[in-house]
Image (cartoon, rainbow, N blue to C red; front, side):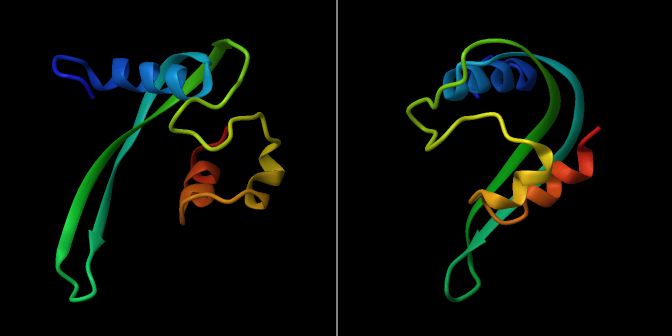
Length: 96
């Protein structure tokens, strides 16, 4: 998030920057805690992610500078791509 930016506006901006897609936020889903520990189990980083459900409006999908890949994928094929651990399960939890 940028200073003074709402969570919803940050989500819209990040999706546009990383995929070239314009979206509309439909609803807040949940906050996720990502806690990263070192080899001694000491906390190194703690990220809090605000997760929203959204709707695609328009835009040709292309990967931005922080994205390795950006493309449409059928929901049944979601486990075929490499994602952060737990991401596919999270998406399936909230799919329509």
